[in-house]
Amino acid sequence: MNKMNHLALFDFSVGEPINPEAWDWYYKVVGDGRCPVVDTWWQTETGGICIAPRPAGNAAKIVPAMAMRPFFGIEPVLMDEQGRRLEGNKVTGSLCIAKPWPGMARTIYNDHERFVNTYFKPYPNHFFTGDGAYRSGEGYYQITGRLDDVINISGHRLGTAEIEGAVNQHRAVAESAAIGCAHEFKGEGSYVFIVLKEGIDIAEDTINKELKDIVSQKIAKYAAPDHIQIVKRLPKTRSGKIMRRVLRKIVENRIDELGDLTTLDDHTAVEEIVAGHETILEKEAKD
Image (cartoon, rainbow, N blue to C red):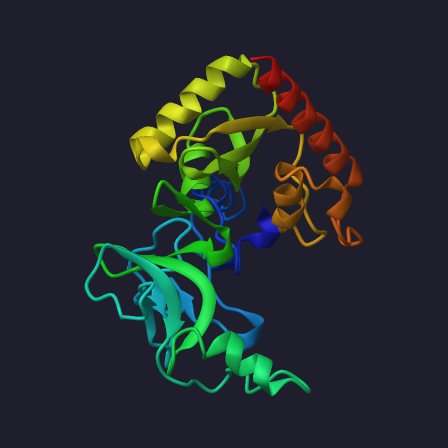
């Protein structure tokens, strides 16, 4: 740690939101409890950071695992499904950027029509990021995840990051991944994969009940996971991003359509998850 005494700030994550537990570990263990963690949001297409806790005043608040403040020249807005701007705070919507900025992408090579259709057609005169976000009571931005990772449960749209955030608050959970699944009555339900912390010994029925209770309390009863699968590890790329498309295909029982797995860091993770999923299906069939 002595070699890091000169550090005053940490840049931690971009893109997919991290969970508060990971933020807290990084702050306390790596940052020695003194270096502010700057968890930023941006995309390749934006050319640079768009939302971040810093720059701001030295004493300005930092909320763990929240991107928070618009960067210089960035005007984020939240849109509803009808293409209208959501005003005020405590609202969730599609994250767009209202005005041009220097680093933004100009086109897609040899396919400008696709560029326009992807980024500008969904919400005319706005740059559509493809991400969802929540604007807190204080006006800070929390990235809720990709909009294609939104689950429609009984008419309620929930970002998978919201479910994961609640699940990860359980004392035994190290990390999780929530995926939408077909449900006979609700249209969609949620299938949650969890990795337990090292050394934790807890009965499967116990943690299933406790996780459903936590999600019910933190979000709503309709959001409680329909299926929970304990796994040794989540399938991730070598850069550490969860391969959600792989989990989605497993949940949909489309094992033969997993696609390109060359970036997967550990192929045994997928094999173990497939086997565990089949066991759950067999158990549910008997019940």
